[in-house]
Image 1 (cartoon, rainbow, N blue to C red):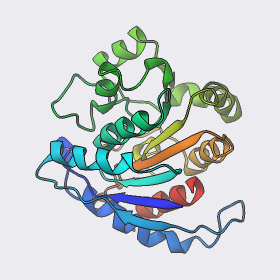
Image 2 (tube, protein in one colour):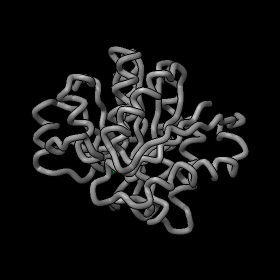
Image 3 (cartoon, rainbow, N blue to C red):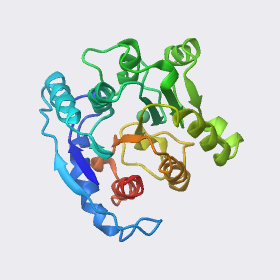
Image 4 (cartoon, rainbow, N blue to C red):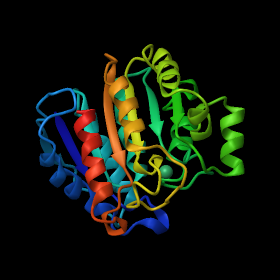
Length: 260
Ligand SMILES: [Mn+2]
């Protein structure tokens, strides 16, 4: 399994410092997991995409160029969520008709910044026509602005909020997600670590109570892994500077192992 470390923090507005440390920190914990829960040996080949955190636009261009070269299922370790913008652009160029399943406490659909940041990257991907609004599935949302809610409603974005997930069974939600995503050309999975409850994953910029347990997220990942059209996955927004006893980084590593 190929892993790309992307130590980007320039797209995180005021919440930058520390995000650049996550890729090394998470990769360091991979060896703590002997086998995947299915009993497979997790073997990873780790590379780094060099970015310049003083230049977000240029960093996005570098990321896009590097991801265009990928043609096997791989995992990207960020870094801030704005990296999903160039990564999906490259992915969609190689795999037209693909969609995205996003695990996040926030929809990242704010009004446009230039270049796109971790608060609006998804809106820009949709408005630029890179990502079909019917091929987006949000999972775990529990804090959004009025504007973001309007965008979701106006564009009928599929949105399994944390509230809805807790009202239904995990299996039902996973079944509905998979019944849609299995028809896409390829699937891009994006995981913002803040989808997890802030009591579990404190090492992130925007801590949000009332989130998913690690087990629930792993359930979704293990179900999605059964699909044949997985193309690329990323895990973003882990911040080792805000972590407690490295638990968020280690949880990130566990997620990478199960994604792999
Ligand atoms: Mn988020």
